[in-house]
Image: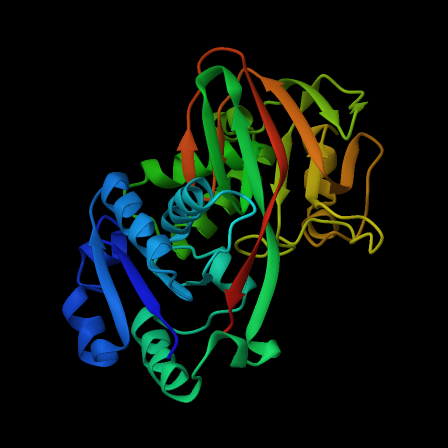
Length: 321
């Protein structure tokens, strides 16, 4: 029998408002899974330590992208980057859900748990899981050495998307429609000279090194690093994948704002590269900047110069269900 554990982040927005809880999961899975409700990082850390000690095969995370980011960070820290990780199943428990659709994991949290029940009844051992139900994918490793910070996750954003993310959370009503409305109003507002849009499109000062080579521009409109090609909303901005190179998708854009807006459709679909940009795979990116960043929807504000390293993280096996 596959040993399955479920971690429910009770602080996740959907779980706070009647989403998933221990009773709902138990009614479906009964004794086929061990269920943990966590309110703090310390509680999640304790649960993952237990999961490692008892050598669980499958870990299910309930929450949004920030929850999966936190679970993966604790998992990589506790197991070690070369550890024998459990297979990970990220549920769609957030408002935007960037990671789960890229696996893909479809349906609501309850619908996925119901499919998981059938899966656990049909598959006896980890080695028996059909290969088409598994997706092995690298994650990102982010280091902020001065603050002794180490994070693991799916995507890092700076510049324009970081500023839009802050506006999104400040709206007080996070949802896909809110994200769409804020994004389109920022883009349209720039053409009309709206102050909020002008501020959002203000380039940030950067010093960037990509795989040992200096990025030639000292300002950029945006930086996006991701292990998945499709971002949220309609954005699939990465040009193409180099099959002969290992790494993650990286886009750094330093063209003037109006040049980006004039070509927004092609750029947002990865259909073109522009001269003052980098759009390719990368393995190591060092960024020195004076503005904050976000990772998997979690905002990290910085009011003074700082440096981050974005590296290839370990490979995690995800369950497609």
